[in-house]
Amino acid sequence: MPTISFEGKSIEVTKGANLKKALKKANLSPYNGISSILNCHGIGSCGTCAVAVSGLTSEPTKIEKWRLNFPPHKTSNKLRLACQVKILGDVKIQKFDGFWGNIKR
Ligand code: FES
Image (cartoon, rainbow, N blue to C red; front, side):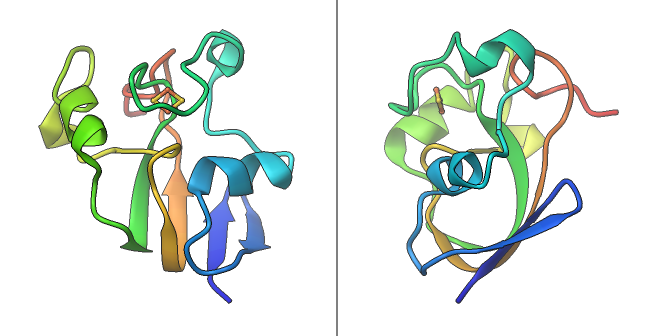
């Protein structure tokens, strides 16, 4: 089973699991602060669930590509939207600062 590593924790998930749902099920969050309430609930339009992902995942969806090329995001940040990502192998996740999680520390 693939493992998600995030904030010092490791979560085992089934292959193909949705990243946002897997984090929430483990009481972890891809959101910062108030964006945990003020978000699009996973349709890929708000961009607040953006995280850095390394490891084997699904390809970016069409709406994900669109949203991550729209301010304050930019494609060069190479982030992913947790609500759009399917886990295909072991992954490491990092969340940056700010409402949209786009401010690198
Ligand atoms: S929850 Fe809005 S883009 Fe992921």
